[in-house]
Image (cartoon, rainbow, N blue to C red; front, side, top):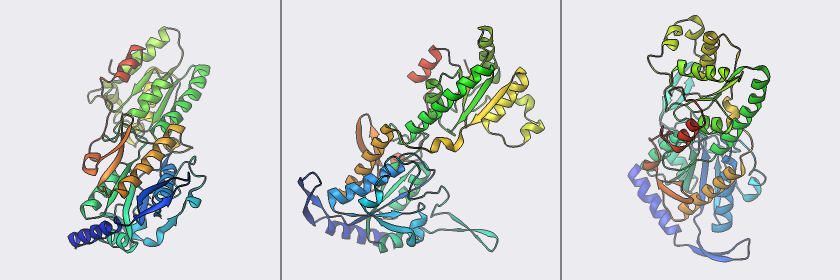
Length: 396
């Protein structure tokens, strides 16, 4: 069935590609275009500043440049499992959303159609809804599906493409950890948000002479912690790529004390890793306070307070980093990515993800895009610069 669907659908697309038309542009220009019918767009994974800008760009480019239609698919892949969650989007309906955070399409990180969990009669039942997704995609008469998401969402997109769905990916994650693109939209906004928070915490730390621990997002990659920590004047930055020892963190705090500096700023990525044989960590591992799950920032803060006998305050920024209005650079990148996705649809180049390489918007295959996390190189120039100005990574 899958092979037949793929051949039939591609045949229909090839026929529509012959329908070249001349359409007047808003600027009064006329260019040769292909009428490619309808494309769908959905968001997957966590929300991120810039998602609305991508949606706006896809709708406007598809409408103004190609005379096409766009179907907004709500709540990630749920909108293809339950097609009543689809709605046609026009340029009028995406007015005024360029600067808005979040996503008007809604999103979820739990709706994998290949492994969909539902509660039935008090039990969790797992369904494979991939066939339903394909059938609903075809019934909606869509030419292409634009999927905006991170590694997990784009992996689902890749698997749907292997089943014959003409998919185009757009990279999105505040963690900036997709290896196939130099940067992802949302990252710069998250760094700005975290830096602003560190700046505010800096003043209260100095006023009270306290040790402040600020935890930011970054399970597998420490880009936010590194850049926000450096921009915010952190004294210690702990990231997943460089395992740390608490005694080295204590040494940095003591070094500042000896220099007459009464406070310290410690920026922690949520996925930072302590050395396996760290004596301080091991000494307290089985205590009641640490037997319950604690965030990395809270555990590190508690251990510093206990060992140093000093006032420590912990701030976990959490989803604050996902919210708010995107920065100008993220709005521009989101817009360029959205337009590039429409261009791929017009050229029928499916199974690809738009990406940024240097100063060029290009694309790569979805196979190249997923499964490889982009981490901070421990010998990168930004790490070396931070160390040169006295920042500790807990391993120096």
